[in-house]
Structures are given as structure tokens and as C-alpha cells.
Amino acid sequence: MTTAYQDIITIQPRRRGGRPCIRDMRIAVSDVLGWLAVGMSHQDILSDYAELTEEDIRACLAYAADRGDKSNKRMT
Image 1 (cartoon, rainbow, N blue to C red):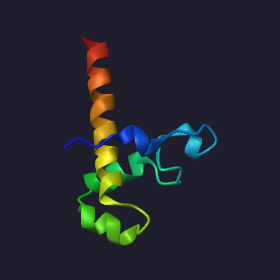
Image 2 (image 1 turned 90 degrees about the vertical axis):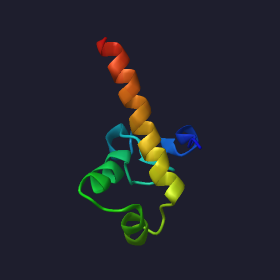
Image 3 (image 1 turned 120 degrees about the horizontal axis):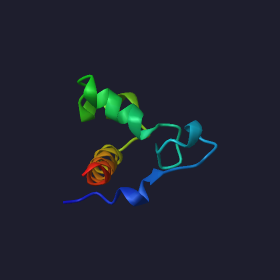
């Protein structure tokens, strides 16, 4: 199963400095990735941020994976 992050991740120049955010909210992809990196579970994040969904978290991961793939291709 793949998450179509393009329907969830938005970029607006005047919101969070143009950083990728979730569904026009002020929660950035990097926020979610940071929470996961420090050991928060998906359930912890969803409990703390009721406006987020499991699909939102998966979209952040898919976005990061896609950006990583594109970055790696430029380096080779």
C-alpha cells in the first residue's frame, strides 16, 4: 500500500517559511519526522495532535522517502 502524499503534503510560501506541511495546517513534515526520530509512536503523535491521522503520518514518511530518493539520484 502506498500513500499518495501529494494529496496531503502542501507547500505555501507564507506558511512555516515554505516548508512542507500537512493539509494546509501549521504542522510541518519535519515536525512529524522529528517526533518519530525521538521515539514517539504513531499513536503518541495521534494522541497529542488529534487533528492528524495515521494517513498524515504515512504521507510524511512517503514524502521524506521520495525526497531522499531524488537527492540520492542527484548525487550519483
